[in-house]
Image (cartoon, rainbow, N blue to C red; front, side):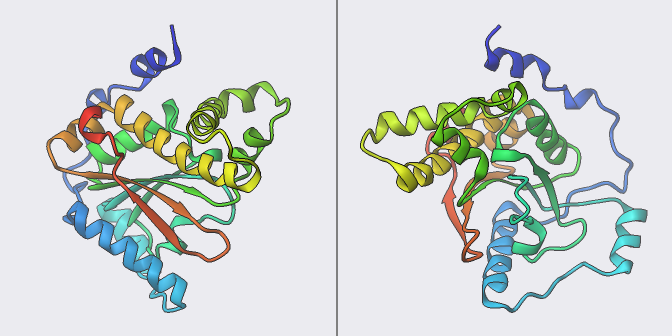
Length: 234
């Protein structure tokens, strides 16, 4: 069984999970509104004008009693410099975040986003990489890695290979930066391919899925938009 087949059969059937209580519903924010919300939040963050919304104890109590209704679900890197709620100026219950080294979309990450889309009503999915990513740099630089790291970064290896095939003259930082972008799009592709609920919602126009790259030196997020082959993927 190849890796793609493994993902296809091992991502849980989310529809088989117990439905949430009646008070668990979507945020009521459309995908376009959610995208604008986090884009505006990043602009506030970069300009030093953050509002720090929904960060009070009252918000904790509200989400504790009425459940979570995140408008956005994000797969991003576990890097300590990349905290989505802060850099998007969002609060408790606004963003459903899945963090993993190299922002890869393996089984657990896809299943988590499936839950956010199907059961929490998230209307926007974001896969976000970042500059100076250690996981990507380790693959670009080459060398031997522990078995667990090899498994985790298999898709990053593919991203490096694809980048080098498309741009055989790239070296050093240029290769790293290009691979980071390729890896983000590959992760987004795997989310769409292997996430049945996400793919169905995209096809129906109920959600949006976009790629982005965060600059750890400036705080700015570069938006790459939907996957260029989204129409074929869905």
